[in-house]
Image 1 (cartoon, each protein chain N blue to C red):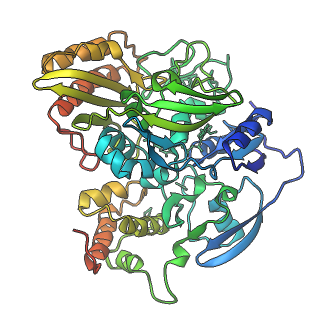
Image 2 (image 1 turned 180 degrees about the horizontal axis):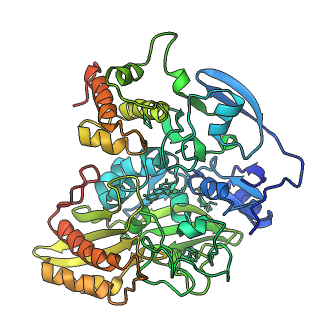
Image 3 (image 1 turned 180 degrees about the vertical axis):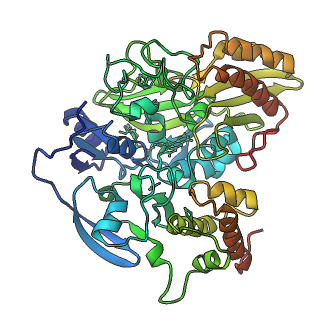
Amino acid sequence: MNRFSYVRVASVAEAVREIASAPPARFIAGGTNLVDLMKYNVERPERVIDITRLPLTAIEETGEGGLRIGALVTNTEAAYDPRIESRYPLLSSAILAGASPQLRNAASVGGNLLQRTRCYYFYDVATLCNKREPGSGCPAIDGINRIHAILGASPHCIATHPSDMCVALAALEAVVRVTGPQGERNIPFQDFHRLPGGMPEIDTNLARDEIITYIDLPSKGFAQNYTYLKLRDRLSYAFALVSVAAALEMDGEQIKEARLALGGVAHKPWRDIAAEALLRGREPSAKNFAAVASKVLADAKGYGSNDFKIDLARRAIVRALSQAAARTPQSQTDKRIT
Amino acid sequence: MSISVTASAPVERIAISLTVNGERRQLEIAPWTTLLDLLREDLGLTGTKKGCDQGQCGACTVLLDRKRVNSCLMLAVVKDGSDVTTIEGLSTGAVLHPLQQAFIDQDAFQCGYCTPGQICSAVALIQEGRARTREEIRELMSGNLCRCGAYVNIVAAIEQVLAARPEKQP
Ligand SMILES: Cc1cc2nc3c(=O)[nH]c(=O)nc-3n(C[C@H](O)[C@H](O)[C@H](O)COP(=O)(O)OP(=O)(O)OC[C@H]3O[C@@H](n4cnc5c(N)ncnc54)[C@H](O)[C@@H]3O)c2cc1C
Ligand code: SF4
Ligand code: FES
Ligand code: FES
């Protein structure tokens, strides 16, 4: 780990002042991604700004029927919050599908959004990587790319965003509230993370001098018809190869509204609004679900070792939509897929 | 690229206080000291193990303000004021913690390297009260890897303690 100076801030305003004025600096919350990357010398901040004492630790009603989650709420606290469990079980389930109890106890909600989009080459400073060293090249494209993206990648980077929680937040249309030197602004979840394009070194649209303060959940929680289906190389404590958050609002036998987001397949949580629209007014059938999967994956592209993900994603989408329609959400304890 | 980490300025040391296994400690540490290194190197509490040093194995699990965490991914300075319990703090004198005894009874280790982390994790698991079935124990212990593959016996040890609890889970 590199040497750095350390400061602990007591207010959001102070945090923003510090990040705006400091030399290359990073906030630290749970530290589970930052410290990990610092040990590999991938992150080398000159200053670490400790935001863990900020008063952003509550989950509150928004007044519009939704919930506001403080950026420092831990993943564990969010997953087991009775209001989230009952009104947003998709979010609870997705969080419990990720990492381990120990990591979820440390990890913050804000930090989960800002964990780096990454791959094994990114971690290995002995290799080139456009995300780590802009312009140096991407060895993954012609290399070992089993875990890499099949959607929205660019010739500069094919890494994936590894979060489970963010896939649910994308499906739920959460809003990220941030504060910077100019004051506060709201970023719709869809616009928070970005695709690599020609600048893979930038994962999100958060400015360098902004801090996440809260995540707002709109009132609609899809608590009846939902599932979070995560497929990976071992049943627990592993990142997704493909994951699917599916949520349906039913009107009798017809689908009134559908939400669909994928994890492990792109540089950002991958929501496809046009594919969701195919289900409006339709009945939940295998045929209709297959049509959605085809639409989502129309432009999917494999890079060799990850070609299998295209078919895996297709089947996972159909399976997840079927689970949501049948009100049989995937258990995060008993991982047998039914 | 260079990965040298030479210090350009004199090392800044920061005063923190931690309660470790019931004892209040005043410490002066460099900000890049992890909680794991502080426990093992500065305090000589080598019961907590360094397996991967990357959050991937659970060998470094300790209880921080009664919650289980990976001490390898924590900067100690951030945890100023916290209460830490390590494997050394679980027994009272010569009396083993029920989970320590259960690990012996059930033969729940081979090399023993993962064991302090497994036991600390299991202590928290039982306090959390969310594991009733064998599947739930396995899932909620999935943050602790055992290279010797003692998993079946580890689950048995936890079941032994859960079954002996006066206020049994429903
Ligand atoms: C072994 C391992 C397995 C994992 N498995 C999974 C998994 O299966 N699924 C999954 O979803 N995740 C997984 N994770 C990732 C984990 O969920 C993240 O590391 C965690 O959520 C990050 O949160 P944190 O609070 O620890 O962030 P930190 O490490 O503290 O911060 C991460 C980044 O966010 C910035 N930051 C933090 N808070 C704010 C804020 N409020 N405003 C602005 N910037 C901020 C920091 O500066 C830093 O750049 C795994 C991690 C490990 C180590
Ligand atoms: S996929 Fe992205 S993160 Fe991975 S090596 Fe290529 S540029 Fe780097
Ligand atoms: S040493 Fe901390 S998780 Fe492996
Ligand atoms: S007993 Fe050897 S690693 Fe678990």
